[in-house]
Length: 365
Ligand code: GDP
Image (cartoon, helix red, strand yellow):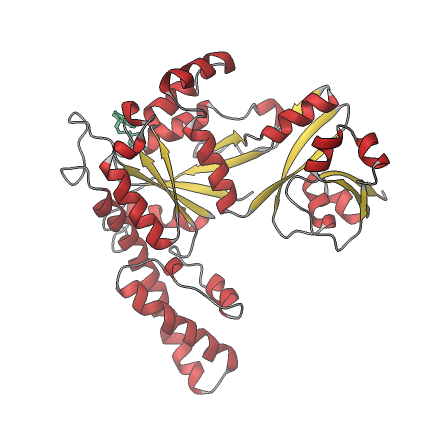
């Protein structure tokens, strides 16, 4: 499954956030084949629609879909020229599909800041610079090879060279490649380079507990928002310390605690949803009396491929996908009512599954 890596300078709240994720973690019983890597935290994806389907179908069991966060360890500063832990940091980032960049916005005299004071702009720049330098090194290596080939007018080499020419000056300025726009032709070439700064990023602003109800009072947050906006990235506001507390509460206690704080949902839930979106993920449902369940697929996937998320047999023997949109299901109240209203569609192999589809797959065994 796709995963988002939690990245940040030391003492910004990464471990606290990762602890919250592990504590909030998905019930292992539901996901027997899930990874048992200590650096991976598996959480359930909060989804109101699943609660609504539970209410309508009254099944024996409800299973949410999950999302994985990876804790990225290692030294940030100097990573691009360093060895050992620095290299490990870069190697770990290379393996994730998106980056949750935790930025310290809370003031606390008792907790040392690596550069002496809370300074989100500098923190963000430090990390972005290390990643850009690492990418620049990959680009330069590639350049050497491709330049010779391009002289022979090799078509692929010429196309690669033009992408490298576009990327290099941006990296030399210490900026991430993701600020650039790429054409349909350039995108596959870009992907083949596996650059760190082309991964999608979400900034996670870690504010103080007392600021969570009115985060805009935190001046550091404004800085983070400004930087994110310039990059076309999103910001999620959390207080890692609070998330860790919330993760230990049961549902009822949680609700009271959130009310006291003056917020309507845990920051972690927002982080999960935004990370999920960032990776282009979406949810379809299966809804039977035995089990109502949410499943993750990648937007743009066709029906057979999506069936394969449940089981490879479903994909191999795919016949059709009997589909009701979530809105129709919600509105009409049952599969039977949807069928009678002509809202149950028989979709074939070319159907592109939509977020919220409630599906019954028909397949040959
Ligand atoms: P890491 O080095 O990025 O993993 O940072 P940690 O999660 O270990 O946090 C560093 C210190 O900051 C710890 O003492 C945490 O208790 C504290 N901390 C983390 N998040 C918050 C927060 O939201 N508010 C406050 N006041 N302290 C926090």
